[in-house]
Length: 394
Image (tube, rainbow, N blue to C red; front, side):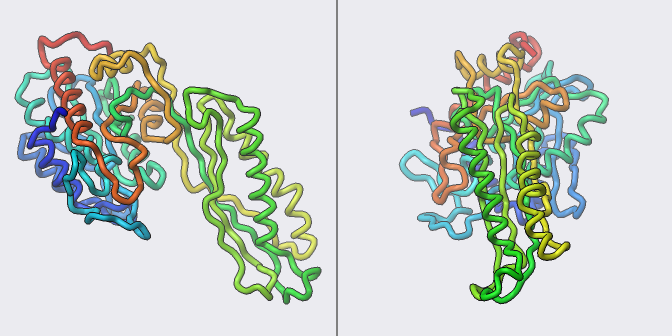
């Protein structure tokens, strides 16, 4: 088994042992990366959120006046609440050829390898610059990347390509599904449960709409459209949480639930959403309002990110295939920040170490071999971007 370098392992340890759960600030980690890069002579730009408790980091290694290759990763991780870990999730633990810790797979190992290569990139005279883009709050809706994109679009020189290092076991991903999610608040009219004819049951109304959403999910599962390279090969709809009611003997006044659509690039997500809203407003709401005019449904979008649909013949795809040795590209159902870079006109692919199967789970891990493969990827990239290196297809 090929083993990673001591430099890469030290950087993975550094990042894992700086907790950056999405609900908390990531500034300690971002400031550490900033100081590390500045010590190497790299100029760093921070893009804060509105509260200034979180920030994205953007930096360029090499010429500032040429478009380069973005190495992009999010710095936040999901919570460990309610999970039973056999190791400390925020202490890197090596065992049986694996590194355990929150974020090892999703996706601090890619960020760590990219950072560990900074001295090597800087030691060469680069023909094509390397850009680092490290973001906050990917796990709760790609919020940081959206803020960073607003800055990138106004830069005089935009990157020519982007590699998002989400865990793909170093396979090249050119397409992934998009996602939109909503909160639905149902207002009913409460009364004693012995007098149900006088009340409007918010929980039951929510349940009827959830059942309608489930029906649409079955329709997509059975009738498509389909793309067999995705798993599942169709657009999926899913309800994740439901909250409502106060006591069994009270007809509930309020209920809310969260639901999402993860859609194929060729599917019409807005048409699906419109079907759900129409059923709520035209079929269910009149019955509620007949009891009291204040009753009804309110829809609030809580997150979205676009799908990715990079052409298999794009230069960034050819580059990634050359760097990995892959002879084909693949598609995944999970979402990333890649679609946001693509919407800005930056050809983008997803390729990084680790497996999505480990993401968000207790005892999250990455195989040491995956980190070594990512280092080999960076070494080949360095040969392409340095002066006198092989021609870039992007």
